[in-house]
Structure formats: C-alpha cells, structure tokens
Image: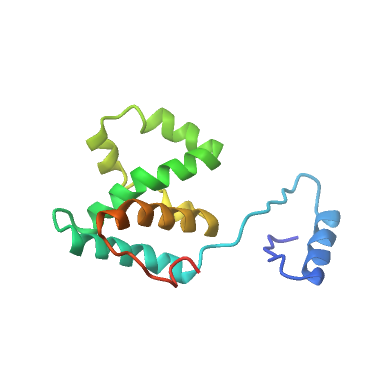
Length: 143
C-alpha cells in the first residue's frame, strides 16, 4: 500500500478513507488535518505586509512580516499547537526581543498555519493596525 491523501469532501470519500484505514498494514498511521490555506490567504498576507510598509516606511515589508509573525502568529500557534509551544518556549522565548524579531525571518510560523489560523492571524493584524489608521482591508484575503 502506498501513501494516500483523501480530502473528506463527500460521503464516498469518507467511505474510501474508512476502507483504507480498515485494510492498512499493521503499524501504519492515519492523520487527519484541516484544509490547507487558500491562495488568497497566502497572497494576502504579503500584500498586507507591503501595505504596512507603505503606510509605515520606518520598516520594509520583510520587517513587518517578522513583526507580525512574532506579535500575532506565535501567540496563535503557542495556544493551539503543543509541540510548537514547547519548541518555541525552549529555544526562542528566552532570547532578547530584538533577537526574537530577527529569528522570525527563519522560524516557521505562518507557513505552518492552517486556514483557520491564518484567518485569525490576518484578523489580529487588522485589529491592531486599523485603529492606528492603517487600512488593511482586502475582503478576499480571509475567504
């Protein structure tokens, strides 16, 4: 048997997944995960960083990305992913703020978020920056 990924989109797909689970060799692992992020979400975060850089030019888009990952993304993943929290708390959390910020260029945060997490991430960025007068509205980003 080879590795299979079955989107659970209809009853027939669910039946097929159940059949595979029932006939899988001993020791195989079944994993269930939420759907991947949308293309609009992936593109939208980068558009938001660019918009932030234009509105607040004291940092560029890459700098705002690092800032948002640290201030919004880390909190979301620490709350929802035990493994992420454990590794982050042991390796990044003890570091000085400027080092943490620099590490966000290399530390996976948004790239490992699912659709719901990235939507909450975008919402958190907007909730923080829009009251400051920064318009980050892109209706299709969280679709």
